Structures are given as structure tokens and as C-alpha cells.
Image (cartoon, rainbow over all chains, first blue to last red; front, side):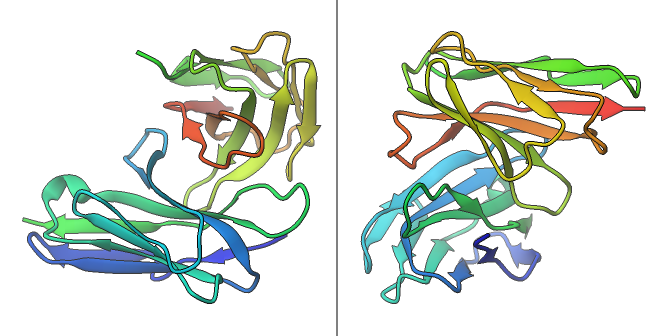
Amino acid sequence: GQQLNQSPQSMFIQEGEDVSMNCTSSSIFNTWLWYKQDPGEGPVLLIALYKAGELTSNGRLTAQFGITRKDSFLNISASIPSDVGIYFCAGRYTGANSKLTFGKGITLSVRP
Amino acid sequence: DGGITQSPKYLFRKEGQNVTLSCEQNLNHDAMYWYRQDPGQGLRLIYYSQIVNDFQKGDIAEGYSVSREKKESFPLTVTSAQKNPTAFYLCASSRAATVYEQYFGPGTRLTVT
């Protein structure tokens, strides 16, 4: 099946710093979603993107649908301790009856 | 408050026993999904249902079964045929199968010994 690549597996930043993470695919996707998961909880939808080039913000979070339609980016500005968690990208590639594919996630740690 | 509930949060079973995980939603969503999450892995789709009384296999359906008798409920049974059942199970729903924004429940951690 289709795969989404998220790397690195872990990121460590200082409180107040900005952080950027990306998600790439070998196929063209027509939907990108970004989720955050706290330990032992279900993922929470942060941002949904449906159009190439689309830039959407949700508070300190900004996500972009890449122009090539094979990638997406998530930026977190002025990080705070509660930003700690696992950030997953998910996407749907073009194709009949295709379902969401999830990346393996990036674990973000924020040092106070 | 609208949302998805999964119960119980933690479940322990002996090997060889079937176990059913509950998922209920009051979002009036047509589509519901079951995923399995293992450490360091992305979510893998087990089963999904686009409408009541209809469901399809996902990528890893072997050893699992589901039913969708009511719009609000989509229980998952982990059977004794599932070789590695210990995992974190997540239920999700979306307004329709063609709407890709999925909303997740809090998950059930199943441990089989």
C-alpha cells in the first residue's frame, strides 16, 4: 500500500522555539491531515488540507499542502510544554476507494 | 457533548479468548473505522463501515470481526485467531466515507497473556 514518510522519529526543542516537520509520499495525494496524539489517548485532528498550495493555520500551528501534492508541512511556532506529543500526518492518495494512510509519527519533546 | 467513546480503557484477556471492544459515537456520522496502533507504528486499518449493516475489511482484518447494527455503534471482536492481539485499538468516525476528516475515540489498550 501507499506509505507516508515522517522523519526524524523524534525531535527535541527548547520551549519558545519554532519547529517544522514534514511528511512525504511517493504518490500524489489529494488530502492531507495532521493529528496530535498525547500518550495513551486518541489522535486529535489539528488541520485538514484539500488543495495544492493551501496554507492553513490553527493558533500557533500552520500546515501547508505541498505544490507537488507529494508532501505536506506542519509548523509550530513559539512552542510550549503542552506541545509535547506525537504528530501524525495522514493522507489520501488519488485513486478509487482509497483510504487514509498514516505516517509513523514524530515524537516531539519540549525542554522548559 | 458530541464525541466517540470507547470502553473499557484497559482490557486484559487470556490467550485463546475472544474479546469485544466497544465503540459508540453520537456525532451522527455515517462512517466508522477501527485501527490498530503498535509502538512506533502508524495506524493500521482493521475494518471500516460506510453505513449501517455494511462493513469492509481493511489492511489487517485477519483475526478480527465487526458488526454495524446501529449507526452509533461499531464493536470490534478480537478473536483467538489473531496471532498478536496485544495493541492499542482506536475507533474513529467521519461524517461520510467520502469525508476524510476522521475523529478518534480515546482508545482501548488490550493486553493478552
